[in-house]
Length: 420
Image (cartoon, rainbow, N blue to C red; front, side, top):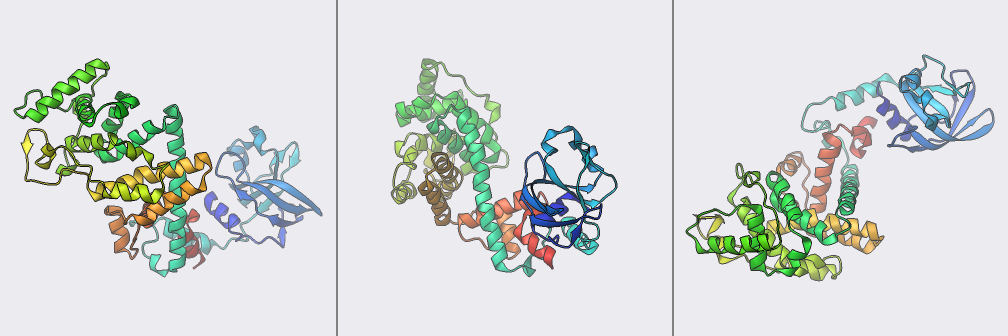
């Protein structure tokens, strides 16, 4: 037996509220099961029970064995002094609080072992997701409900991270936007050096310098320009970048920070940095929180964000390629919308208590097409076909935060399977 399984049975009311007796024989009625507490302290708060004809309101603590109360040192923590009921799978020891016996409810005779065995079989499955073999037996409604729930959990989780970083940046909203955009353009491989880059350049320079000067400065700070080049464009970048770096007394990154292995050419750091410079030099990019959302989205998706013509035949310095578009692709734009604009807009809506912004963030997710990656491909193989980015974001959260962490007891799909 696992304690989390007891939590699941309790909060889903799979433990009867009537006809119960404590370990001392007294009758007890559960008026309210309480609210599940995921933080420190008793497991359920604001519960209500009727005992000896009196209604008691307080907290409930759950354990596999009564003796776990002492094993977990609850007897030394005053936060547990207001527990009104100790719910255990097996009663093996009396618990005393303030020199009085804690009312204890033993569940061993109320929980069919087959329920736990069914749960254990699912949770121990080593396939891509624990319920892979049973997923098709769950009604579409419950799956869609869980995906919707996962989307909001993902956004709320990101809100916490963004607000924390917002405070660390001394509430500089523009810096937050710059940093998050750089991180997404860097992808997993070059995320850290891209963030380091934004930390090395003062925010005001993004709005003060021309696109040519800003581009040169970004490359110079990235320390990615070749020392000796036969291309005039590269030499000009070096000359301008070095001038502005010295003028503002800025430090350079370690050139070994940048990675190329395993990256397709359009994702090479020089090409991504050129795209980053073009985005950061356009003031309208920062206006998504104040512009009418339809107007801003139309502008962003239709704006070419053309790079210097040099990048039409290069992804790297001094290495020519076949001609290609030297601009920001629609795929990259949608990545920015999904991973920068949406979370910051949703976070700002929460921070400013503006429902219109949180609604706009969800609207953008519904407008964007589903993401394409290994995780989404696997979901498709198993019968789930996301249409919008809202769907794919929900599926990513479901896989990463529920399936991988075996949180089946917190999943609406899992709840349906445990009923079978």
